Image 1 (spheres, rainbow, N blue to C red):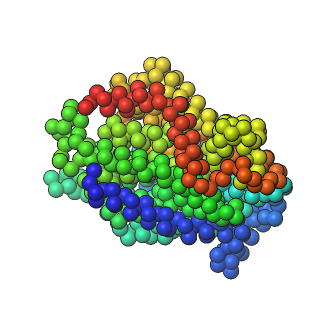
Image 2: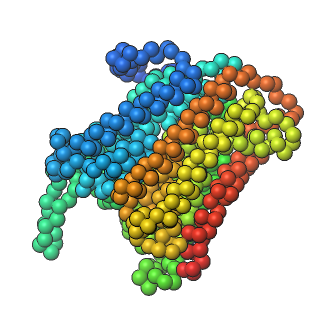
Image 3: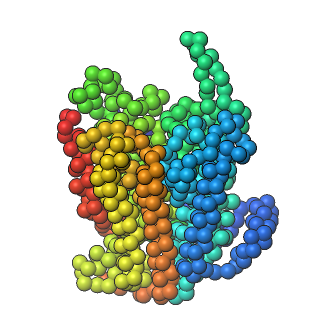
Length: 564
């Protein structure tokens, strides 16, 4: 690892935070204060949409109504996307005349994109029509990200409320998140990416002649529009099979920098939005500091691992003198690939610009660990921060136990119901990943899908179920996931990882909204200081270590010791 590698990563991170601060204020105005930009342009369309759908934008919802509306939209989205995939062969915008997607794969893909996971058990350019990619997948990229922002806004309102359950209106939140936040940002990023050569067309695939005189079919399509929202919405589903490692999806250093920054932009902005909606900016900054405290050292560890010499068993073919280059694009290099792998797993994005399966054991282990911590080190749009708030409740609960005092968060007592819901939100993805791995290694038909055996094969299983249960979607590769059993198992993991976190969070929001704040005293544990930041980061690491240390020891750690 060189000084330049460190400075470049820190500069990239600082630029993201610099952009996230004003964007967070904008989010708070749109979702917290109801102040919308250019009301003469967008407001009539917004009102017309409410009238067409029979929505009363002034209606306030309790947590149960909010959760039901959230789940109803997700169900409709799943059914529509599943139907589109199953019938794509009969629909227009299918220049390659791709056949209907088989039922198991269609189920897995529909669940994946509705839950903001974007796990891909298929090659996009060889499986899906333009209609499926744009009307189906890209639409869900917007909706799933908007749903995450909406749940976070409801939680912020619940924590800020004073004795009345005022969580807002889900339909208004999801509409404004899409119309005023995601669409403008995605349009700007898509134009910037197209200027760098990211292809955007509905024309047919291009037939080209190679230098050797052979024929090559070059896949093209509406790529820039999908890439923009896949990165901004922490979705990660690429148009091409190799995602942002493809030269038509990520052709230049600038396109790589833009996509890399987009991974963390909205998750970081959510921290600033959260503090402003609470009326105390320090609360959002403390959560952001805990995230940074976890991310930056792990990012440096990943860069060091990928910059170091190749393992002895493959040094003869992989060691270039500049780092471990196997599975990486020479356009990006090992350090930038390591930063992308770290940020994409931290942000629950899942896009890749290198193949994680060929990373060094420690480099791949960092990506694994960031997912296993629970999608809270920045995490998905909205979902990462509300997951971190759940850990915040756990932290003040543990601090209260140590001093024999009833825990409080933001001036409200944290009682049995909140801790029960927080436990469900933390343990559901953890248990899902561990049970999924256990079933996988004990099932011969699933084991047959592995490319490798031993510690690396175990890492491939661990990565797949960690990615699904934590709604990440990045692939370690080396696992043939398009089998009926794995499509169902991973799809079920995605559902649990999304909804058994979001619904308990809404229940917490409703419970906290009904509570009146208590006056601070000398025994109150402040949740905006350095001590809270350290305890919060430690709680995240403690839960992750207690849950997954044996699994990590059987996979990347033992592989690292064996190859050195």
